[in-house]
Image 1 (cartoon, rainbow, N blue to C red):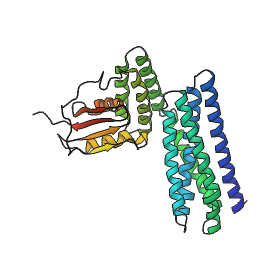
Image 2 (tube, rainbow, N blue to C red):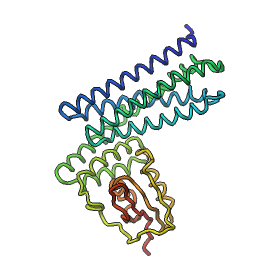
Image 3 (tube, rainbow, N blue to C red):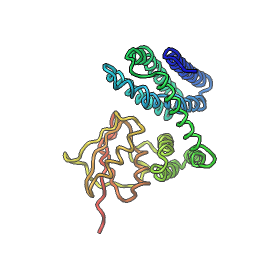
Length: 321
C-alpha cells in the first residue's frame, strides 16, 4: 500500500507527539524522584538513555533526509539552519543533563531540554513540513521511508556496539564504579588518575566511551581538594604568559567539545610555546587528562582562579637535552 503525502505528514506529526510525551514523562519522573527522596540518578539515567536512543538519532535522521531536501528549496534554507542549530543545542542540553552534579541541576537541564524540544517540534510541524509539501518538489513518503531506514541502521549499529561481543562498555562501567569507591574512601586523586588513564586509552578508538569517562571525571574531581592546583603533580614552568600567547575561551563551547578543542590546540604547539585557556570552572579534570596523555611534555600555570573565570597557561615543554 502506497502512503499518501497526508498520511506521511500524519505519521511524522504522530511521532513528534510520541517523542514529546515520552520526554515529558521522563521529566515528570525525574521531578518526582528529586522531590521525594533525592535519589534522582536512576530517573535521570533513564531519561538520558531515551534521549540518546530515540530523540537525538531522530534529529540526525531528519538532518540527513528532510532537512537536506528542504535546504535546497527556495525560502527554506534559513529555517533549516535554525532547526539544525537547535539540534546542536538539544545535544548540548542532553550532555549537561548526563553530567548534572545533583538533583536540582538535573531537573533544570531536563526542563530546558523538554522546553526546547517542544518548541523545535512545533516549528517543524507548523513551518517546515507544510512549506516542504507546498513546494511540491519532494516526495514526503519517500523521505519518511529514508528516515526510517537511517534510524534502523543507527539502532542496529548501537546493538552491535553494545553486544556481548564488545565488552568495553561494561568494563568502563566497572572501572568507573571502582573509581567512585576509591574517591569515597579518600583516594580521590588516585580515582581521577585511573579515570584519566582510561580516557587516554579510549579517546582514539572509542570516543563515545571516552566522553562518558570525561563526565565521570568531572564528578570524581569534587572529592579532590578544591584549592586550585591542589593534589595535582607540579607541571609549572613559572611562565605567566605574554601578549603573544593566544587565548582559547571554551566557555561558549558545548561541554563535549571543550577538551578535544584544547588538545587539538596543544598538539599544534611548538616546544616552548603555549596558549591561555579561559574556562568557567577550575579545569582540574583536564589537567588529569594532560597528565595521562602528555606526561612530562606540558606545563600548566594558573593565571586566574575564579570565581567567574579561570585562566591557565598551557604550554608544550621544551625537551631536555
